[in-house]
Length: 446
Image (cartoon, rainbow, N blue to C red; front, side):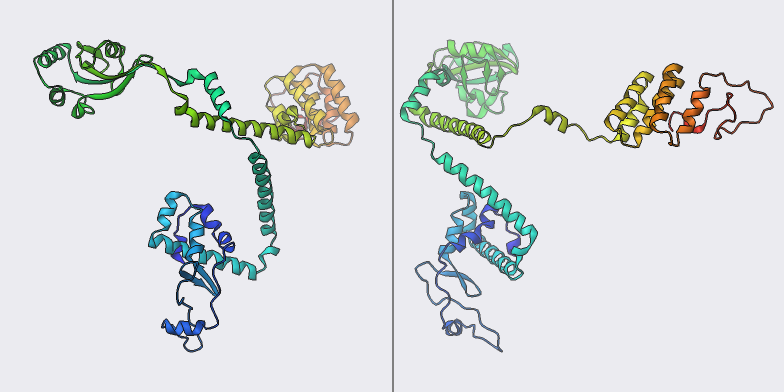
């Protein structure tokens, strides 16, 4: 079984193998004389242990290549599975090792299926969910493919009309094939041209002198250049070389030409004038494009029709809200605390109260509005209104004592400090109605 686990074939082929086999006849089950056959094959039963059945002769479905209990795997069975694999995988499966590994994998899968049946796996909730998802996907794919198969194929007249309407796409610019010899300096290129003019052989001189290591051993061939581009293969952008290539007669040697990598002599051949690709050369491509467009159009139309049938609508404004991060009342409160500007803090505390009027954090937010007016802004009138509002909403809050103290003392000057006075206990509420330390709970972070 380890060999089966090492198998690295296409997942679709292996996972569906047992299903494919279930649809094959698989040949007849071993006959009642299986024991005799086993004896003839030298595998007779011993000590109550049954022998393994072996085939006597091939049947019409090919030789039996393996057995699983009373089940035969014939060549026909395995060929049916291999036929569903991609071509490169089929080649590996048709080797002795690949064929045997596939058989081991099939036996492994069928063993799992039988064990799952014995354990009544169909009662498992996870299994039911997976089956429901598979059925859902199969329904959608089958419906889509059925509708898609009804699309008409592009006609020859459609292909021709598309070709004529987009003829510019099939324009072929003039081009000429170039070979070169590259040297370091203009003087070296001029001297080389003189040697060629005196009968020197191009290929030999190219091999000996060209600095282009890629092309020197094949006569300096770099490929085609086009009038519509300044790019020369293997050389780079070289407008002077392109211009010279179209000015030369076939076989003529150019003057020394400057390129991005040095100096060059070039020769040309195989000039092809500008033209248009004939319809027959691009017919298959146009047909494929039309089929692809038809599929895209079908998909868009199907989506629109299904939305209409379902009376569906998508709300973009709600999507924007849905994509906002979820924030708790405490998140808003902390944002208000962190605001640098006091007026901004007041506005943010009010937002907390508006959004979460029943949350406990709104009690603190309402107190902090009044406290900020008094301590940070210095607007005592606004603070008195806010503290009174707090007490009307939360008269029994633990912050109510601090609110009342603030109403009585916030606009009074603090008492003069005496040098020998003992430090006051700021955690206690002051006695009387005079000034004094503000209670701990009246600080900014109650």
